[in-house]
Length: 268
Length: 169
Image (cartoon, rainbow over all chains, first blue to last red; front, side):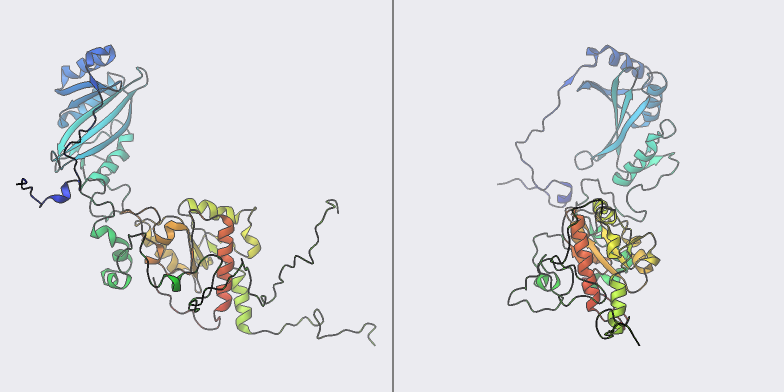
């Protein structure tokens, strides 16, 4: 008999899983292989707890406790010459671990090295802001809040950055549907016309292959334009790029190619 | 005694043309379509090219205006995001009657390839559209053709009565 799988959290799971799929892993190597990284790691280890550290694609990855994030980045900036925070965001591991992974990508211009600092927080947990250390963290943390719902403490302006302020839901979470939940699908209708207008305007057409019986009435083909309501059951009349009505337009002369003159003498 | 015989009924005789008021008004409206500058995405680049010297919209009387109060044509050129939907409606409401809308490009027509949570699936969910222009992005010639078709549409309409309220699709 096939093993029973609970169906109440299907949204959290991808719709298809290959049982024999093994995700490819980038090879990890020991930190001691690189003298610069080994020195940096010793400096971090002297003050903070390091959960894991390894080198991947010539970059060191340091996993720390989430509470230490400000201290570690401050140490790296002030003492280890990692003077640029090039990227910062979150990764959604809620379905498998119930946690967000926050990563900080650091660059040292003088050492020509990159370090990625990682930490994990729970869904409802918040994290300390780095915007007093790096200005670049300001918008990145707002984007992280906007897309994942990770609240950042001590941020000067904790507000959505891309989505509208009254948006509900966090679009980059794995459980968020690509085509939007009900709030997202009716957002513009609700906001402009009110919820009563939902019935009049109707749901979005998300099917690009849908054929509507009114399509031929509402739209005409390019080169066969006819006014709305014209009977085209006997085929459309051919309108070869007609820029004017056939009988001409009041006060506008039609260009006559027969009467036109090509000027060959440029100095005329 | 006139030296030259003038036939007043022939062309160029009398500076008079007989027509109906509808035709005069529609002639004026259709040949001075002032468009709102409304480039939302890459279609906006094609719209700008249509307005610039090579394609030259001015010769059709289409002049881009930066204010909805001076414009009667809205060329929605590009992807309309849900965040922006309320502003397009507000700008449309600020335009003076009579007003027309050209939906330019796949994104404005149906949402195009952006079948996502953040894109309005066709501007006709928010404002009534007169002319849908296919293409991704339509070339300036196509936009010119659309404006000329819209001119024909305006000339067909009755000018003396108030515009019928247009409905959303």
